[in-house]
Every structure is written in C-alpha cells, then in structure tokens.
Amino acid sequence: MSTNAASSGHRWRTFEALGNREFRWLWLALLVSAVGTWMQVVTLSLLVLRITKGSTLALGSVSLTQALAFVLFSFVGGSVADRFDKRKLLLVTQSLLGLGSLALGLLAVTNHASLWSILCLAFFSSAVLSFDQPTRSALVPLLVPEELLTNAVALQSVAFSAAAAVGPALAGFLSGPLGLGGIFLLDAASFAGMLIVLWRIRLSGRAAARDQDRSFLESLKEVFQVIRQDPALPWLISGYAAVLFFGPSVSLILPIFAQRVLHLNNAGLGWLFTAVGLGTILGGLTVASLREMKRRGLIFLLAAAVWVGALVWLGLSHTLLMALGALFVFGVALNTVQSISIALMQGRVEERLRGRIMSVNTLLMMGLRPLGDFPAGALAGAMGPGGVVLLGAGIVAAFMAFLGTRKGLREV
Image (cartoon, rainbow, N blue to C red; front, side, top):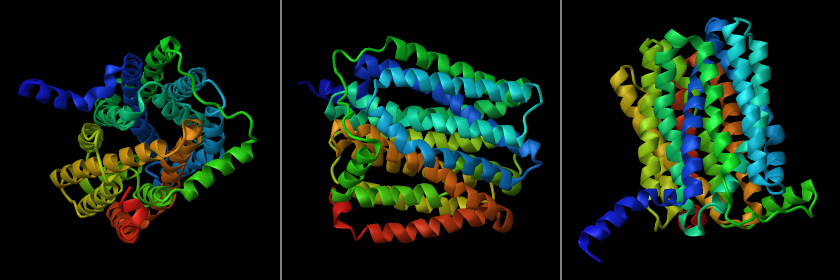
C-alpha cells in the first residue's frame, strides 16, 4: 500500500461507519432533527423565563418534571425496546415527539402558553423520549458491524454536537423575526426527515435478539445483575452519573449566566451554546478517530478531570471571551466522557440486553441530569450561577479522585 493510500485510509477512519448506507441516512436525519431539538431547548428556556418574569425556580420545575417522566418510564422504555421491532417503535415515538413540538408552537403563537401547559408537554415529551432514546441507541448495532460500534456511537454524538453548535445560534438569531412560537414549529417540521428515513430503512435481514419470555421485573433484574457483575460498569455508570447530576446542564445554567453575569441578549446566548457545540464536535471526532482505543476507562477519568477544570474556568469567568473558551473545553471533555460511557455500556453486554442498558443511559442523561437541575436552579438564585458551577465541579472532582483508585475502571 502506498503512503498516500495509508494516509487516506487513516483520515477517513473517523467517518468509517458512514460507509454503511442505512446508518448514513439515519445519521443525516438525526442531524436535522437534533438541530430542531436544540432550537427547542433554548427557546423553551426563553419562553419559561418570559412568562414567569425570569424565575430560575420555574426553569428548575420544568427540569424536575422532565426528570420525573424519565424516572417513571426509562426502564419500561428499555424493556419495550428489547421486545418489539425497533424501527416501527421509532416511527411511533418520533411522530409523537413531532406532535408535542407542534402543540408548543401553537400555544406560543396564540399567546396561550402557561407554565402549567409547558410542564404538561414537557412531561409528555420526556415520557415519549424514555422509549425513543434506548430504542434508537439499540438500533445502531443492527446497522453497523461490532468493530465499528464505537465509531458509530461517536458519530452519533458528533451529530448531536453539531446540532448543539448550530441549533442554539439559529434559535437566538431567528427568535426575533419568527418569534418563539415559530421556532417550535420549525422543530416540529424537523421530524419529517427522520420519519421518512425510518420508513425506508432496511436491516438487510438482520434481526434484533428479542427478550419476550421474561416478565418486566425479571428483565430488569437481569440487566442490573449483569451491571453488578461487570468489573468496570458500576464505576463507569456512577462516574457518568456524577458528571450529569452535579454538573448543571447548559440548558439551565447558560440562560441564567448570560443574563446575570455577562449581560448578553438572545444572540449572545446563542454564541455560548455554539461554543459548547463546537467543543463537543471536536470531542466526538476525536473518539470516532480512535478505533483501536485502549484503556478507555483511563481516558474517561482524564476527560472527566478536564471537564472539572473547564467548569471551574467557567465559574470564574466574567467576560464573554473567557466564557467561550471555558465552554469549548467543557464541550470537548463532556462529549468524550459521554461517547466512551455509551460505547462501553453497549459493548460490554449481549445484543438482547442493549435496549435495557441504554435505558440506563437514558435515565442518566434525560432523568438524572434534569433532576440535578432542580436544586441547581434553586441555588442559582441564592449563590449565583458561578457559585453553582464551582460547587458542582468540586463535588465531581472529589468523586473522580475516588474512582481513580478503582482498578476495574482504569484497566478496561
């Protein structure tokens, strides 16, 4: 093989999973849909702040409502994902999510949005996502070979990251001419591409292993037993949980930080989200490039340490430039932590358990994170957003120091 060919092969290894036609179309549809979702995340925060006259407690209430839905339904969603046709199940969940966004848009356009209606729709969408997220994650291993799973997971993360870079900025720029209701309607329209791809996608004769013989409680007991017996998964999952719970989410902290510390308008808030998105793109591409990655547990711990440092940097920031730099590094580290966590969780269990193991991921990302946002939102009113950020960083730093002594995680 020539030197040029070898160099080309290494360069394209980053995007190797996109060589699979079915995964490539799913990835593109996910990118479009995720842009709409991130536009909705920012717009929903702005809508809540507007109708409640800047209440951080109201923002925390929305997060708590979302967390409650995920706590109630995440494991049910994972069990359902392991029992039924994943493609057909996603057609249902994506349709329902699109209808939820449409309802938010109509309420905002007609000026009938209230905190109560937002809480109800947030609960509904989160309940649907409890089924959608583990099902979508469990579908990916059916589209790509085992050796490309980490690459595919990282590329999925890149799609979300690219959306996180573009979506919030678009929401900030378009909220003026379109209004907040128009942003929600655009998000509803973004689900059309995903529905078309899911309707046309084919698994080339591959079928997911289904687990229909056990009861719901038995199926849950089995996945918890598998996690408990694994030398790395208990420590990995607990560390991942600490990052998500004690690190306030950007959807909560950045609108408050932009208003109270940096005194930015909606467009400036969009740039803060863009900095996080650009960082997560770099983090995802880095993980996607390391197909032969060894000692992923150690990389997880190092990425978590960088994440803590970036959070401290953000907490001490008082200028836009300082905040943008901190958020970029924050995004790189957070995506590395997430990509490695998801790839290890999927790769260390049998195929028939992947819906349930991904329901654990859904509960952590979509349930535990907003659950942590509730006290963070309340504390932000008392000690300021910078104080909340520094407190979260300190707690996670202490826990990661403990995890560094766990041999099972370091050597995986």
